Each structure stands twice: as C-alpha cells, then as structure tokens.
Image (cartoon, rainbow, N blue to C red):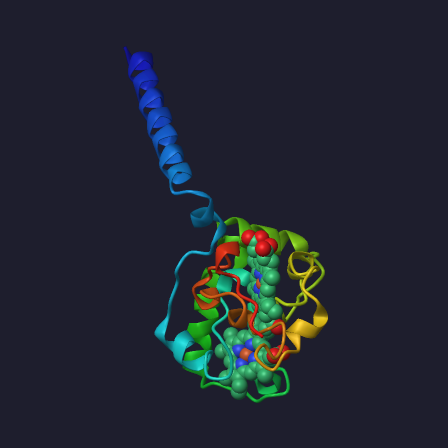
Length: 172
Ligand code: HEC
Ligand code: HEC
C-alpha cells in the first residue's frame, strides 16, 4: 500500500515538472535569453545619474562587491554613498548577480569570466568582446555612443536587461 502511494506521488511530481517545462518553452526564446526585470529604488536613484543602469545579472557577485567597495575611485569619478545606501545596493546587486540568474546571457557572461578574474566592466568580458567583434571600434567612439559602456545607445531596452537582436539600432 505504501509503495503505491509513493508511486502516485512520483508520478504527480513528474507531471508537474513536465508542465512547467512546457510553460517555460512556450514563453519563447527572447524571454529566456533576456534578463528578468528587477528593481530597487535606491539603486535606480544612485546608479543612473552618470550612466544607464547596468542590470545586476551582467556581472558576477565578486565584481559587484569590488565595484561597491571602490566607489571613491569609480572609473575616475567619486561615486561615494552613505553606508546604508551602499549596503542596500550591494545586497540588491549580489542577490541578482550573474551566477544567480537562469537566463542564458547571464550564464554565458559568467562562464566567459575566468575564476581568478574580477572584471569591473561588462564591456571588457570575453562574452561582450565575442558578441561585438563585428562592430567596428570607430562606432563605439561616435559622439552619439561615447563608449562601449553606453549599451543603451545601440540596445533599446538595455536598461531593462533586454538585448534582443531586434532592438539593436546603431546610431549615426
Ligand atoms: C559620479 C558618476 C557615476 C556614478 C554616480 C556611478 N557611476 Fe558607474 N561609471 C561612471 C563612469 C564615468 C564610468 C565609465 C563609463 C565609460 O567608460 O564610458 C562608469 C562605469 C560603470 C560600470 C562599467 C560599465 C562597462 O561595462 O564598461 C559599471 C558596472 C558601473 N559604472 C556601475 C555603477 C553602479 C553600480 C553605480 C551605483 C552604485 C554607479 N556605477 C554609479 C560614473 C558613475
Ligand atoms: C555601438 C553599438 C553597441 C553598443 C554601445 C553595445 N552594443 Fe551590444 N551589440 C551591438 C550589435 C551591433 C550587436 C550584434 C547584434 C546582432 O547579432 O545582430 C550586439 C550584440 C549584443 C548582445 C548579443 C545579442 C544576441 O542575442 O546575440 C549582447 C548580449 C549585447 N550586445 C550586450 C551589450 C552590453 C551589455 C552593452 C554595454 C555594456 C552593449 N551591448 C553595448 C551593438 C552595441
């Protein structure tokens, strides 16, 4: 009797696993490629005044921890925050960092970084370089772009974590 109940349980678990698999494939390619929508008001306020918001799933935890620990010398700027804001943003970035994501881009970015490396930029990761090897260097220096760090100049929706090919527009 007991083994039979066990079998029923296993069957039900297998069915619901199959069901959620079907639902996730039905959502389509773009959905699982793109990064999920995430937000935090302090992050939004403090990390978008000089540049676009970089989705936390674009870098691993150790990169965010280092970035947040060196805000007094942040790419030539002083981006220091009060301790409470810094802690809140660090926690948010770490909670949604690349190694905690299920989407393909975050997984690939993370895989492209050697375990002994802690990049401070997305735009220097091997993943980024491989995806942009056909974009001429001169385009990144257009006035309308500024630098490779300005993802949103070419990717409409980049600050939402959307890097779909259909939303790429190279400005002039
Ligand atoms: C005072 C201005 C300023 C503020 C505030 C600021 N940044 Fe930056 N950040 C910069 C500059 C300048 C760069 C270099 C941009 C470039 O290369 O074009 C940069 C670059 C970056 C990059 C690297 C982008 C890449 O892939 O090349 C990351 C990641 C980043 N910032 C994260 C943050 C986070 C997180 C916050 C909020 C805690 C923040 N920044 C707040 C000025 C700022
Ligand atoms: C000068 C314009 C430009 C800038 C700036 C730029 N990209 Fe791109 N990106 C492109 C182009 C062009 C492609 C190739 C699109 C294609 O394959 O059709 C691309 C491809 C990608 C892809 C792969 C898309 C796919 O599905 O194959 C990702 C992810 C990506 N970029 C992320 C970024 C991130 C993150 C930044 C900022 C740190 C950035 N890009 C900055 C132009 C740019």
